[in-house]
Amino acid sequence: MNVLPKKNHAINFFTESVLDQKVINFWVQKFNPTWSTHEMLGSIVKKRSTAKDMVTLTIRCNKRMNFGLPGQHHPVIVEIAARRLERTYSLNRIDEQHVELTLKKVPQGAVSTWLCNVAEVGDVVEFGQPYGEMLCVTHPEKDVILLAAGSGITPMYSMIYDLAKTGQLAHYRLKLMYWVKRSNDLAFHEFFQNTAKQYPQFSYHAFCTQDDDQTASRLNESHVNDCGDLHDTAVFACGPSGFVNSACELFHAARLFKSEAFTLSPLEISDTGTVTITLTKSQKMLEVPRGISLLDALEQANEKPVAGCRMGICNKCSCHKVSGVTQNILNQNQNAEPGSSLRICINSAKSDLVLDL
Image 1 (cartoon, helix red, strand yellow):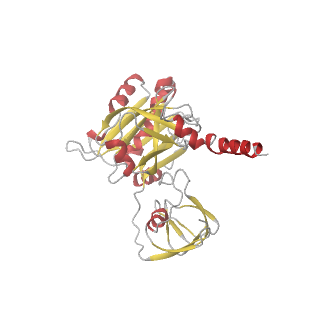
Image 2: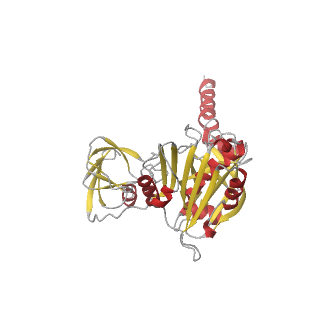
Image 3: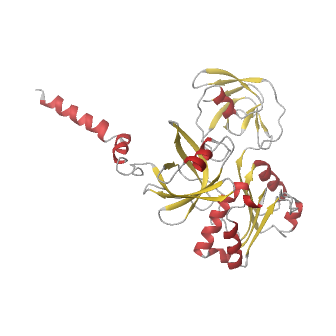
């Protein structure tokens, strides 16, 4: 009479613990820290300096890795002081198992500081699914202009590296324009120079805006004029939001324009005071400041909304706005439409809001 309950108890224990993915991962990672039933993990095998305050990590990925297309981004998750933190970076795949992650140390940036200063060979990072539509390979245009500022060069490097590696670069008329403050900020400079020598239809132009011996200017109309007719040209831009906004205005005549801003450099917002946000799912009412992103405002109120890239690309933070007026931090466009989707990382409150959070 007691055999069956004991047998069921054993089966339940086996099902609930041994077959639990977290339990399995815990034990298999005792043998190899990158083994996993479902997680995309990688182990740092090399670390080198790329430019001033920039580091390139070579990472060996496990078999679960979903390698994105050149130019796409991956969420990168690390554990710092028992907290899982996620940021978004471009990866460059160099062979069947390895990727390069190049990043710039951001002041007060927890993840970038850890990866640049603390991470060592052997440390493990986790990746999320790739995303992003700024891709040469998916568009038919063969006349391409790439505009990069600062660490916005990383997706451009990934695309050029892959095109050169596969020989496809010979079929493109591709122009790279790259802005940094000083010459020691230039990343992949030698690679771009050598590639330009090998492929005559690839041109590389670097602009150092704060070097004493140069008078290079920021992106302006003269750079557009140097590019000639844009009607059959695809233009991709990546950098701080101010740079991307300027590129969008200047290259409006391009046949195709795609851009990604990797940091929020908001236009001047004079809003002061507070608004009330009502969260329908948690049934909370919060008083938050105007003029900052809703994501930051909610986190300051000790809420923990889902977020990813924090720059308006991945859409992880998107939620349903029931009512109220919001303002896009990047371009200052206002949205009073009820029932719309809202990315809380790049929008601030202009009025009281009701959010489906």
